[in-house]
Amino acid sequence: MTNRAAALPIDLGNGPFAVSTRGLARRFGSTRALDGLDLQVPEGAVYVLVGPNGAGKTTLIRTLMGLVRYQAGTVSVLGRDPADRGAEVRAGIGYVPEDYRVGYAWMTVGRLLEHQAVYNPSWDAEYARELRARYAIDPGRKCHALSKGQSRRVQLVLALAHRPPLLLLDEPTDGLDHVVRDDTLSILSEHLADSPTTVVISTHRVYEVESLVDHVGVLSEGRLLGQLPRDELYGGLLRYWADVPEGWRGPGELAGWVVKRSHAARGIEWTVWGDRNAVTRELSQAGAEVREVVPLSVDEAAVALLSGREAT
Amino acid sequence: MTDSMAGRIPAMKAVWIEQLRVVGLAIRREGTLAALVLGLGSVALIAFSRMPVLQAMLDAEMGELVLDPGEPPWGFFAVLAGLLLPLVVWKGERRFGDTPLWSLPVDHRRHALLKVAAGWVWLLAILGVALGWVTLTTVASGGTMGVDEVRVLILDPVGAAEGTPGATESVGWTTPWWEWALPFTSATAAYLLASTLMLVTARPLFWAVGLWVAGAVVVAVGDKWDIGWIQRTTEFVAWYAGGDSFTRGMQLPIGGREVWTLLPTMQMWMASSAFWIGLGLVGVLGASGRARNH
Image (cartoon, rainbow over all chains, first blue to last red; front, top):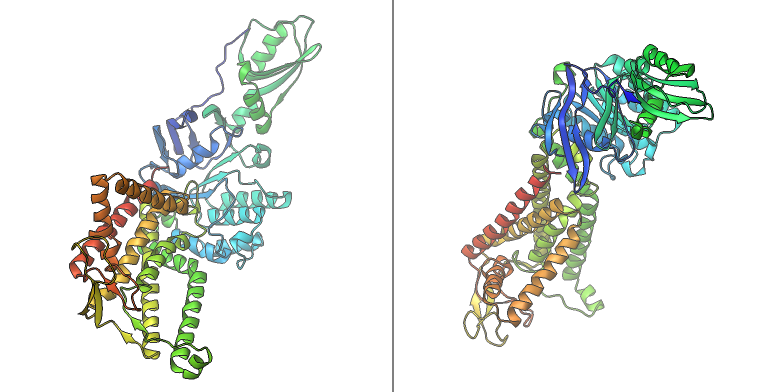
């Protein structure tokens, strides 16, 4: 069987993009952390970067922050190259790192917020107080005495309170219990409603942030497998359940890209990227009886794309 | 806040003042401890010197306290403070990788230099206060400032690295003005070199000890096998630009008096200060550049 449809799209058009990379590459020894990456994050988008551990998500975010130097390609963050103008780039970013340790261990949270305010001329002290109260953060507490969840909340306050045009959140819900996680997502939603912000969220728990997301990028081994608006993903990446006769070999040619295929005794469960009507028609013509076609959540889509790479 | 402020980098003056504050907070605990030790030591010294009863009770006599800023222990403490302070300045600060410091909107190299400079300002302040305090203690205990006579060890042959303690002669000497600057310059050099290690390695103590041991091995090898270039380098580092001329002459304990192998000169102090401070500056500037390249 051959696929007439191309793999998932990567080019999101002409922008404008808050973040874009072209052919971005970075090696650590013999490991290719980023391998010719073409990232495009439209202005105002909430872009989730999905991928397994070691896919290159954190390296990518650190590169965008100017914390890791890239070796090939081009990078533009808020119109600037972080390698040359790192300070200006970071001034426009609210950053929640993967590491949940905050600031100086010996410093109190209140002093840490003052410290951050000095570095961000756009710091909104009133908003910071509001967030701190909402997260029930004790300003007199020493940073080293914070739990993982409390540290995460402090990091979120530090990232949001200067209302940056771009948020880079690396596993932002990691370490949060269910209640705090829901509160965090609700704060993020409100923040996005109040402040025009582009958000890049790196996570392998897509289901937690799915309600916020409008663009998806799937990263594996330093390369993007796909990059597209969420609605386009919902409409184009579908799971087909069909009954098939014994010895069924499938259509000779399919107007879609089979991302993942599973076989039961007399049935198939295929995840296909392509036009729904055309794929259904061609499966039927090949002798399959299509019983159900369902869209995938972003989380399911990511799992299918990442686990079904060999099927391509 | 206005939208036009979003994405603006902070003024360097604000960052500088903040780093001064942060370093001040970082060293607060250790500084308080040192002040406490200094204070208690001073009280004990003054009490001992002013109360013959106390001396009789302890069956001990206290000699006159002489403050000569270039001499041990003052020079030693100044260098020690310079070596140890970077550990406190960078306390709680992860210096490598994805850390809060490097995530702030300031050029990494500039930020590292500002932090080192803030620590240096505190070092000078601490030394100033300590020296002032010791001066007060000396005066309060009836001691004297500076020395008026030293004993010089006559080396045989002249210029040899070692001599016999017996061959000494007394020389009139007044502590010159630049000796009061000496603790500051030697501490500055030590601070810059230690800061270099802090910026280039995650294990500064390991490297400090390693470099010291490696240096000692190289010197021993040079001596044992008479390797000329090693001996010449050692001589240069240890004598012309090294610790001896940096903090003055060789000292041997003879009857509680200080013995030098030669009288220190301002030129030697300036040359050795320039050498070590220059080396430290080159180190810090080079190491701060590393912060840009992860």
